Image (cartoon, rainbow, N blue to C red; front, side, top):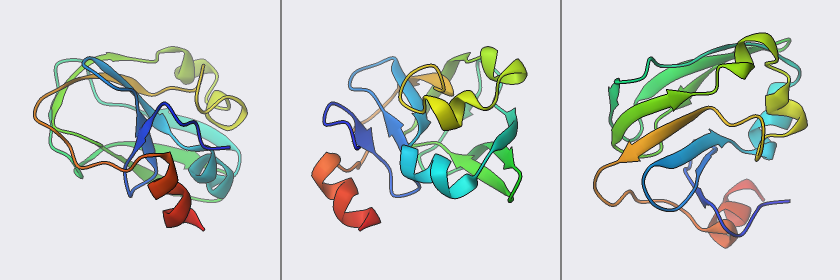
Length: 120
């Protein structure tokens, strides 16, 4: 299921509308990763550019980078993921969110239909 109310990057991150935006990885990405065992997130105050790596997700299969879906400043990270990284697998669009981003500019992102086409 791909929620209609979110926007998506081609790198499989999602974000909410507006600023600050909540950012996470899609269910498609979480499934491809396998069981997530560790998450490294950027520090609050970090400035990011769309498409730049800003964290890592380690799973039983691999280590994958997290890419910023938009330009902006990280204002909060999901500290719960330190103890419960598996939330990315079990609730990628809810409790498994990664960070909140004060978005600057107007990022080029996909809507749900566009993301569905990308992963099909």
